[in-house]
Image 1: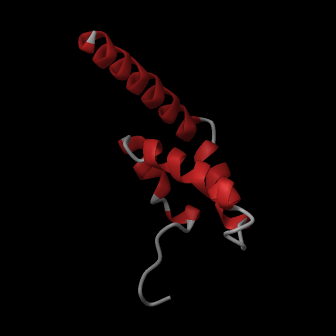
Image 2: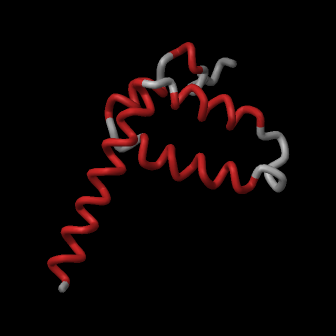
Length: 82
């Protein structure tokens, strides 16, 4: 029984990673960043923030997505001088 549960969790993880890899290819990361930028009131956007955080959590497990997020045109990293 435990073996079946572990296998199911591994299959779920593979599915999630496969979907997360598509985010960079189809512009999903840009959409997520734009949506995050639209949130000015955390209480009104709480559900959206929660979903975006979960997506970013899965997304950042893949190097291709981390590289996409740190591109300068995404304005995701700012220097201390700014």
